[in-house]
Amino acid sequence: MCGIVGYIGRQKAAPLILEGLKRLEYRGYDSAGVAVLENGRFSVAKRIGRVANLEKDGATQRLAGTAGMGHTRWATHGGVTDANAHPHLSSDGTIALIHNGVIENYAQIKAFLIDKGYTFKSETDTEVLCNLIAYHHAKEPAGHNGDSRFVESVRKTLRHAEGTYGIVVMALDAPGELVTARKGSPLIIGLGDGESLVASDVAAIVSRTQNVVYLKDGEIAHLTAKNLAITTLGAGAVEPVIDKVTWSIADAELGTFSHFMEKEIFEQPAALENAMRGRFSEDGSTANFGGLNITAGEFRGIERFMFCACGTALHAAMVTEHMIERFARMPVECDYASEFRYRNSPLFRNTLFFVMSQSGETIDTLAALREAKRKGYKVLAVNNVVGSTIAREADGGIYQHVGPEVGVASTKAFTSQLLIGAMLALYIGRMRDLSFGEGVRFVEALKSAPGLARIALEQAAHIREIAKRFAHYTDMLFLGRLSLFPIALEGALKLKEISYIHAEGYPAAEMKHGPIALISEKCPSVFLVPSGEMLNKIISSMQEIKARKGPIIAIVTASVELPAGLADETIVVPEAHEAVLPIIMSIPVQLLSYYIAVERGCDVDKPRNLAKSVTVE
Ligand code: M6R
Image (cartoon, rainbow, N blue to C red; front, side):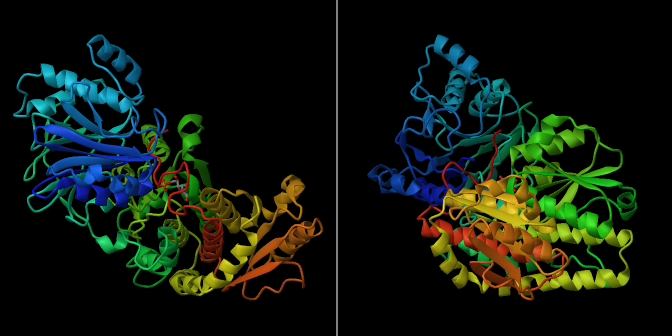
């Protein structure tokens, strides 16, 4: 959720922080704010709306200090108001704070602080944390373990805080220092040339440095321009591990595209290539994964698989379920991570868990991972963001390697998850009944995916025209069968989240058990129509819709010939192997949603009420 940036160095902090905030805006965009420490006081500029609003405001231009922090908010406690925007100052003016997360016991802490004479200007849990740090800071003698008094006051506060947080704190009497700490909300420290940065996402700091330290839960970092010291909540010292970020700032910029979603849709051929690079065996008959941390022998002992994920990632897991069952003939179960974590469902022995998450920070998915581990199961992760909490807590996993995904609507991360799911099916299948020849053909099919995706993208201009004719509808159905049913769900999710059109995904044949009641000339259906054994069944479903005057968009593979007049619009994609078909069918579905949203004038990359990674419950 919220975006966080902190800077301490030789440059004016405010412009660097604003630049970082713009790159993080996809994390939250209700309001934005910056605070710098200058001339012995905190100067704060904050306002509701986008970072651009804040930047236009002359107040940020006047901020001259070389240490500061900024925040983009996705509201949890308290409405969207200037007063609730971060940074917050303690009522005695000694501490400034930005926060991502939720402090669950804020009401008790607030009552305690009111009793001590602290006052509050906002409705946020963050201001409570800020005042509690000020309270401890005012009382704190010199710290333990060589820590400054400042770090110790943060530590004492966090020992009382229940909930989740990623925070950056500044103290009036410690002008050359930032303190940052996390529990459940990501924070990355950047070590530059005579400057230090902290952010909730690499995108905000990669233009300044590629040397980063991923802060872990329960750690507190004390930063100066040239130094970094990490301790734990228990005051133990931690040796920082410096990682190198492998992508560059160009990966996080729009280039010639109008939106990140558009850029990321068109990046998919390259993303697919990256996701499979170096992951096939030398004999070309199976997949190889470096980081599973589970031996082939252990894998052979597995009797079933369980996948947990949220949103788009769950749809990718559902396709993976189909692939593993189809090609490896093994039972797979998929569940919403948010349900699994509380359902306490009976689990089988010899089950291998997988979680799928682009960000690796989704709180429900993380909680599902922890619940499965608590019950003694191994959990592997399919994840895009290197060093994310899920990647670190999983027993092993597979990185997607598709670079930063900035658009809130997941696209390239989704299709790369589909690809990795198919590769997993191949890997498991080859340990079982899939023959050498079938394996070779499977690998060849996977290798064809980027080229086929390029051909599917050639339909963009045609889909844009269709979108113009369909953008005014208020309801839409997406219908597909077997491995394309989750793609129908994904199409409906994409359309809902970025264009605000009500949409539902259904198995095509299930439609007649209820949703058909919605059909009229006012409710179009998007059908996913591959060649093969289900074709006639799908055509029958289309006829049922047509008989009720429902407009139809048919996304067909190249050899499909539909009865004349059945579809109002047809989009043709190339024929593809069963394992690749869901990837290829996803592309027109994404483009259709994208162009409809553009046509409706929606803010595609920052849809209302949403944030890129959902790190609160
Ligand atoms: O980062 P994750 O893959 O764990 O995110 C899961 C969902 O929040 C995410 O896929 C969401 O549904 C997207 N906005 C869909 O486009």
